[in-house]
Image (tube, rainbow, N blue to C red):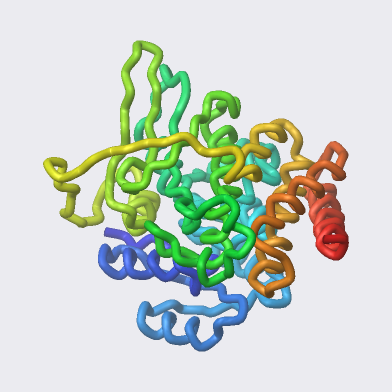
Length: 359
């Protein structure tokens, strides 16, 4: 079997590290390069363990990565860096590779139309790596009327509402189901992450936000469901293990990854509950900005700033939703291209800092 070449953008993060494990287990892939931001020692260690041929530091920008993609034209680029930076990287990857595995929700949240336009201009495939969107992709058929995405509810799902103000970063980072990076773990607690996923699903599957339902599912076994027009419901179940959707994305449409472990249904209960608006106000904001790319970009930018401010102890956990809503309210415009989105992103970050100062 001919080896396929892979570049992993964000190799030292949770998704990138797990991708290396999967690639080593399956074989038939060669990692041409992996990027890191500041974790040089970890990057070196991973490169040595998994035979990564080149390390690229992105702390000062992505120019070296973009030049490398132009020169080497890999079969697969895996994009798993958080934030707005994932959008230009995704656009470049779509133009220089055969398949993009997208773990970064923000690329579609901020610039979904640009991603889709670029895909039309190339023959590159785009495959989502989120467990929920990977699940929908596997279940999807033309008669889908709507979909269900599940959520853990995050680390504070059982806290009393009046106690959320005093939540510390160490409280929020104790995710009850998944092991993930800091930003996405905090975004799970506010459910901004799930708001991103609603918007991402609309872009991937040509849906309206009203067709995307979200319920809290504590067991973490059902990742998604699709509702078909004849009344049939198909659900995708599996343990919360990101190696499975990563492997599926690498080998699609085949399944070559072996992980023979299944839930014991005799001892399993599947429970679902509504998402409380009073507990997760920032999540519901995503439905209000469905068709406004400027506000969607502001939604992401303000959240990025707020998560960092919360980790630094500058704001309270409950301030995140307040600041995001204020910034989204203030930002207006109709972005025409990537530069317009960059301008909105920069403006939104400044606004978020101003709002934080006013708190």
